[in-house]
Amino acid sequence: MPAGINFNMKKDIKKLTDEEIVEKIINEDRQLFAEIIDRYEKKILRYIFHLTGEKQESQDIGQNVFIKAYINLKSFNKSFKFSSWLFRIAHNESLNFLKKKKYNLSLDEKILKIEDEKKVDEEVFKKQLKSQVKKCLEKLPILYKEVIDLFYFENLSYEEISDVLKIPPGTVAIRLSRAKVFLKKICQKQKI
Image (tube, rainbow, N blue to C red; front, side, top):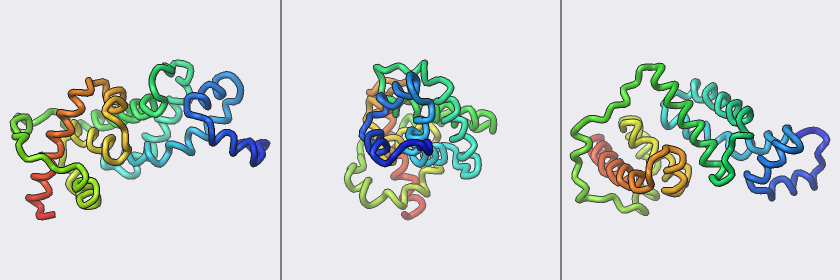
């Protein structure tokens, strides 16, 4: 927060929605962007790290995300949630980084043929496998890693993930289902 803002003003700002803060940043006080950074920095950095696997680079990519968001605030479409817009920028920046590294984004044919018969119970997945699954996540193709991360670690809805990835909600559901099956097989092979 800027030095001139008192405690009561800080409390009032905390009560505002992201969209209200964006409106204030655009029309009144650009320094309020610090509140956006406070709200999202850890989540964005965690998301970038999960996609790229690069801890040091995640910091740089995260800075680029917030710089781009700040510069492009006026282009934010208020019919969407601000968090989805911000995660979309993080998603694009992460993919750009991976493309520069010549990361293979193509999907193996065998993954498409994974049978959907055995589904991982979502509650068991969330409670029992969460800490162990992180190790297996690194072995997932980016296509699956991103939906797992957004749904389970960032707690975004199918609609929000759809906005971030620019795919239909039905595709989100299919990728999430396949990702869980594939992830379970990876974890079983590693005897986790």
